[in-house]
Image 1 (cartoon, rainbow, N blue to C red):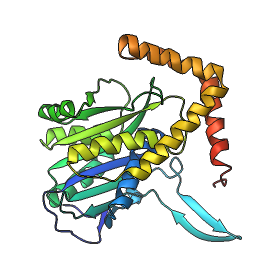
Image 2 (image 1 turned 90 degrees about the horizontal axis):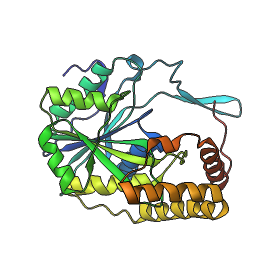
Image 3 (image 1 turned 120 degrees about the vertical axis):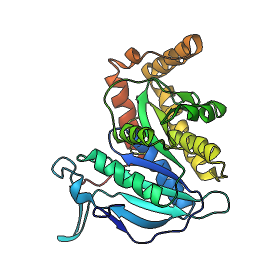
Image 4 (image 1 turned 45 degrees about the horizontal axis):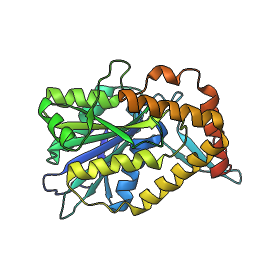
Amino acid sequence: MARKDIVLHEEPSLYHPKMVAAFAGWADVTHAGTSALSYLARKLKAKEFANIDAEEFYDFPANRPTVTISQGVIQKVKMPANTFYYVKSQGQDLILFLGNEPNLKWHRYADLAIELCQLLGVDRIYLLGGLYDAVTHTMEAKITGVTSLPHLTQPLKEHNIETLDYQGPSSIYSLILAVCKERRIEAINLWGHVPFYIRAESNPLTCLALLNKLAKLLEIKLDLADMEAMAKQFSSKLDQLMTQSTELNLYIRKLEKQYEDKGKASIKDLESADKIVKQVEDFLKKERGDEEASF
């Protein structure tokens, strides 16, 4: 493979590994996919082994690096990270790719990731992302899937994962799936459907749902007790707000009724809901406390 834009610290020896990837950006609302992947890397004690050089793939005025300054002295500048990790286990060897959706050269970026997968013998790729939908936190978290090849819809059905229908603006997720389709590589994209009124930096409800489905597809055991506790606490906070806000309570009950009657709610029901979104956003910010301003 061409290695001009990829830094390989180690070439791990893995047995039929699967790759799991997530990309911060437009198609990762509430950081659903990247938070789930970061959790997985910590839980499995994954080891970093490669990085994609950020220089060629980002418009830095549009996607600015972050800086840390302490007592007037610059400490570090953090560029958009695209890091590969590996996990060797008795159950399933894994490669984890935690990235940032690039601004530039999408095809080259996708080629680099896929070529590294092929170098290391990856036989299936899983992608984790998040999107807003007319769902509620009181319902079972909704996960849908998109695949690179038709036969992969079968494992989705076996794990009660709906297939997604969509036409509209795209992301790096879809391009990677399309490249995999051209090359006959197995790839499955799992989408966590986030309640439209949750505008938060973290969302354990959707993270937990993604991790549960991923673990079943990978046929691995994950101890998710701590994530389950966080999800329960997060849901309880939103339930608390429902008792305080008649408007939010009525809105959620309306969506629940539509799902009960039709199996889905209309996206049109998200229109003119700015007041509810702001109300929930302010509540969650207050619950987690003031955060430091960033440069």
